[in-house]
Image 1 (cartoon, rainbow, N blue to C red):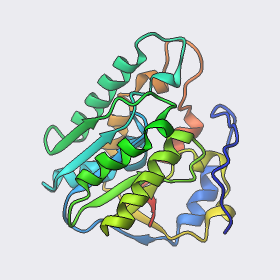
Image 2 (spheres, helix red, strand yellow):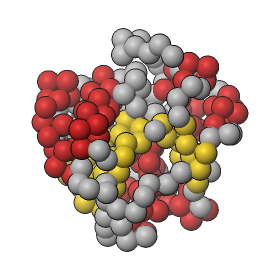
Image 3 (cartoon, rainbow, N blue to C red):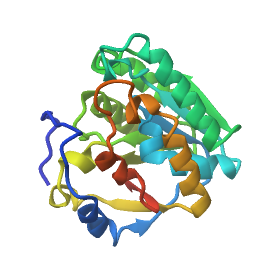
Length: 239
């Protein structure tokens, strides 16, 4: 399959690829879970970790395994008209993580400027490498996701996994919206099944991000047509 990191503008408000098409593609994906050990979840913006791996985070923390969330930016560029959106989104993330687990989640905030991660790729890679200990699993954004910050973080995680020998699982976010199954069906897709309790915890955690779902003005960054991709009874990853 030919892939490119050339980014094409997309509008979340415009209906993307129907969720039914993705479910048909993912129907035959093998069940998967990380091996027991530390889970390191890298997120370009607050809410990416919950959208892509909130169920996995909840399940892993509930089992007593260590979970670290590396929050790369504070997501302040999502709406440039809003002052101190960084503070809002930081609080939303803290609230969401408390919903998933009041304990066992270590949050590392890098405070890199939103939209400028490419200028700090070495820092991102170094921090991730610090947590890539023996037996760890890195959960990262898909490196061809269509957003520059997602792609830089994804590539940094892939580089660390390659050199350290730890497992890497990648979660798509915007791929679901602007890509079609035929373009990515040859990848190694797996599914992490979610229990009823885990699905409910993830749904509650997602509702913490009011600035993205129900902004006081303007259109939501995550409208209902996008949110539908993250309400499955499983989470899909690329290995």
